[in-house]
Image 1: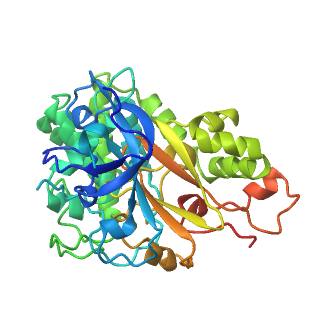
Image 2: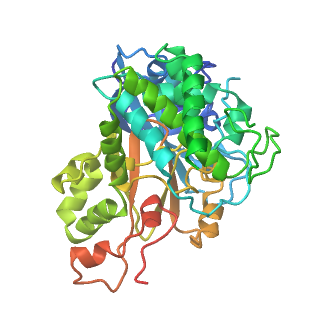
Length: 94
Length: 105
Length: 220
């Protein structure tokens, strides 16, 4: 799977509504951030969790969010951010 | 909305407990067994499968078990699911091991 | 007698299993630890009989997972402090730079994040307990506690204050939630007054907590 995003892209985390094992925490779903880098291509943990090891590998990105965009009650300055890894299929361009 | 009970980022919680618990032998043994079973020669249970295990054994177990006990219980659930072991043979062996423990003292 | 899952023995934590409040840290008491030992021994016995495990290799694997620790991380930090070119390579590819020092990173990749006067980094794993175990060994209990996992992403400055680190507002704070394949190590600021120190002396100053981001490295 080709990487759809690159550093600097604004992205929105999707609410995939996927049951079972996922590695995208609830608190970033629906939020908008900026891709900081493409980490590489990895097997999808959602598949690995049920023993499907055949692939394909999918792009994994580090995405940066402003803390004030994640939490309405964030107690800290505006320049604070949170960085987290998101797989390609959880993201849409913003 | 699908949110696992383990997905607690952002939840309210009290102060971070600072007591550092020692890493006990049985806990290391749990990790060691999982690592070996997941290695390239076996691939019997991966980290991802173990995580699925503790994410699906129910919130009561998740909330009440210690960290390494959760991993142990998750590993057991997955090994049973994959028919590597059965609950019956595990229960039998646990009883046998327990009997040896109580006989030692 | 207690059932297999040990719910009948006394716990040191609250029995309130309300979904909103997980006990901050569940510690086994003596009965729970014995139970854990019995169960893992039983499991191991079965797996050995099925030729899935050899007992000696479990011992060997335990030794292997016991061996990483603070000393490996400190070695990396000290080298980065004295060697700017190494530091650059470390920040670009942590796994490869660690390998230069003979340190094998077992995880997919190690991302080293640098603290500066104007920037502070804090590492956590909200979903479970991801941590650079192949370098630092087991994470501390507080790192895997529900309180840290829940609050580090939302109240990081308050968490730092609980650890005695008050970050001024003009310092930017980045929290890294290691939720997938990457693992993180904080490269703390080198303390003032250590000019001319050798790597061994510098490594001795580095604490585990400074590589997670809840502390700075001091001379004390």
